[in-house]
Length: 477
RNA sequence: GGCGGUAUAGCCAAGUGGUAAGGCAGAGGACUGCAAAUCCUUUACCCCCAGUUCGAAUCUGGGUGCCGCCUCCA
Image (cartoon, rainbow, N blue to C red; front, side):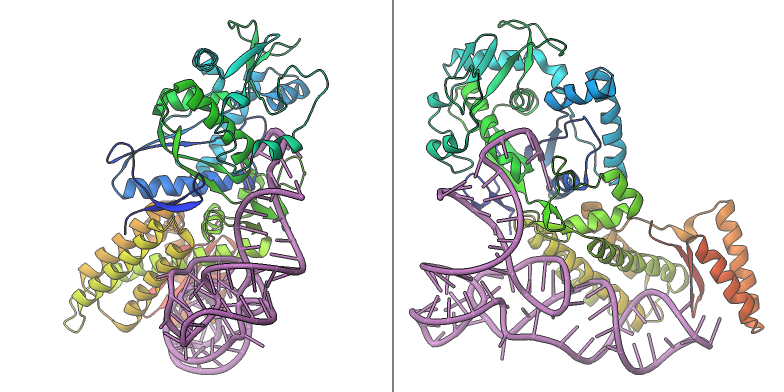
């Protein structure tokens, strides 16, 4: 089947058809770099990284853009608290973001633009919106005029009256309508500012995404993603701005994708509620692969509840995947031989069948939970085949390894424990201890044998005795 | 109040009208010196009520619970 995605614009699953055949323009909202990001933030970073990988696996040339918001109220506030400048704060947390994202196996975007490096583009975008009659200047501020934009509310499916009923009305408001939102904010004392046709000031929250996405991806892009809470107002505003600026009648985005929330104790995890766990802390507590597994084990649009049990279950799942890989590697070293009784073609057909099921799951609105179910079917197929055949041909090993590697390239949940392929001082020492243990076992000195096994276990090395000898692997970390 | 999501085994979770994938945990067994890994066996009145249908976890209506957005938030 071809790829179908649930488009929040239509609230329907739609066949994915890119604007340019074979290419995908993909914009994903990135972090505001005023602090470490938390596990809830990590969800979109991980799941949309996997979607990006899947698109590439399917042969699309993907241009993936994820911004850094490095100027806004939170940045200013935090920089003030820390007694450093806003750029210093941004520099620090961009580095921290990249450290955590790398640890979580999130691939770097093709472009990671920063708002403050695109002030000219932002100003230019605002000028176009004003010129097209959809924004007005008010005492150094510039506001988007939502009354001039009949489509407003089409993404979040709200009508203007309902939105206005909930809108905040502030004293001293310079807006014409409570729903109008700032494109440009006039300078306040002590805040960073840039020159503009409307005086010194800084960009509003939403405009950077409009300006930067059109710069790097064009005025009409294929996919835009983010958390479901960004649907309103952020994405609604972005769409209004971008389309008002381009004035070409084309939609800003063809497919809007929003991930469901990560909950903690069945409540939304957010910085403002204070119930958050930073990704940094989570990585220290749980194996990054387990965090990925956890995020991908539910459909991206469903809420997931972050619990220690859930993460332990995910870690156990990752272990099963890696055990399969390391058992396969070990068998490839010890049991590779011709086997007339083994029907390699039947096996390859079964692998192919599972591959198709995996593809179908991924193409069905990017259903990683179902796809991981298929991955476990592959593991089961490999395990039973290893169990039932003492000798297996080279083709079995290359095909099985290739399959696991391919799935891991997409999902990134298996990783490598490299074990005996390592050749350094430590592995030499481990091999030496294993040899000693083998001798001890031969002479029925089980006390010494268990002592060695426990010693290595305490160092994160697990031994397994097989008919082909003792194999070792590293514990999941 | 408006909009939206969700309810499947002890836990997590997939599920396209045709008698419920997968993972984790548990129990029993095989294998092992003991383990570990793996394999075998075993575990579901699909929130409730009504309806449509030959047939519904899946569709419709009505409940109930939980969550989110409408305000900075992934």
